[in-house]
Each structure stands twice: as structure tokens, then as C-alpha cells.
Amino acid sequence: MIKVVVVDDQTLVRQGICTLLELSDKVQIVGQADNGLQALNVIEETNPDIILSDIRMPEMDGIQLVAKLAELKVDIPIILLTTFDDHETVLQGIQSGARGYMLKDVSLEQLVGAIETVMRGETMVQPAITERVLKGLVSGNQADDSASNNSKIEKLTGRETEVLRMMSGGYSNKEIASAMSLSEGTVKNHVSNVLSKLGVRDRTRAVLKAVEAGIL
Image (cartoon, rainbow, N blue to C red; front, side, top):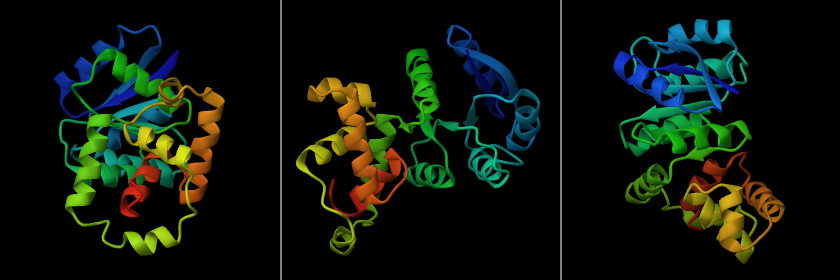
């Protein structure tokens, strides 16, 4: 089972998430914390496989928790949960090293699926949030220098661009493979090529850089 620590300053919300996850036979709640500072001690005591954390909390928020764990070289992935759709906050979380980003109103199936995706080493950003991030980037005119960015990026093949578009929707390799009638291994190779050509280390950064460069 996947060991999970849940961090949220709102007791009812935190307990609600824990109660929801306890319905699954794939995860085990091993600890809870009210804020990022308290979470550091809980994480040290329980050694979880993954952390689910709220973003806005007193003393140490979710983004600060991600940054602190990176500073301490604690390699435990974090999925940030939020009720907000502020694209700037999403970007901050991604840039700080969060491996997932989801709204709190997700279903049990979606949340467990996100946990499993992140545990496989992939990044999971809920499609609805990805759309808002992309729209925010465009409305914020952050793609104005697309021509100069494009010149520094190795050209993607047509198939790689198709895969990248699917990635922007938050789809997993398995889902992309099914939609494009490809093997999962072939999709994995295309994803690796996309990351390499864009000079990024994960799927979310690939999508963001592609938008900035005018590829998407």
C-alpha cells in the first residue's frame, strides 16, 4: 500500500480527505499535520511514500513545504490540493518542485489515480487546472517572445506535438497510447523526446514551455 501523509490546517477538510482515502485499498494514511512546519516532524516520524498538502496554511504553507523538503534533500513527492484556481499559485507550486496539483473537489478515483501517477515518477496536474494555467499564461502575455524561444528549441515531429497536446490535458501515457492507437512504450519514448527537445525534466514544465514558445 502507498503510505500517505495529509497536511491541511482545516481539520474537517483534512479528516474528510483521510476518510475518503481510507475507502481505497491502495493507500494507507500514516500521518496528519496542521501546517508545513508540523508536517516536517510527521514526515520524519512516518516516512511516507507521498504527501498530500493544502497550499494556504499558517506558519509554513504548501509551497514552502515543497521548497523546504527539496532543501533538506527529502525525496518524497508532494501533490498540492487547493480550492483556488489561481494560475500564478499553480505555477509557483510547479516551479517549487510539486509533482501534482489538484482541486479538492476531486473524486476518490481521481485522487487515487493521481497518487499512483505521481508514484510512477510522472507529474499529475488536473486537466481543469492545466487549462486555467495555459489561459493565464496567454492572457498574461507571457508568450510574447515565442519567436526567440522557438529558435532555441529543437523542432518537434508531428507525432511528438500530438503527444504534447495530450500531455497538456493531463493524460497519462496509458491514456495517450489508447487515444492514439500506440503502445505505451512508444508513447513513453515520444514523451522522453519531447522533454529532451524542450530541455525540461517533467511533463508540466514541458507544457508550460511549449505555451511560452508558441508551440501550443
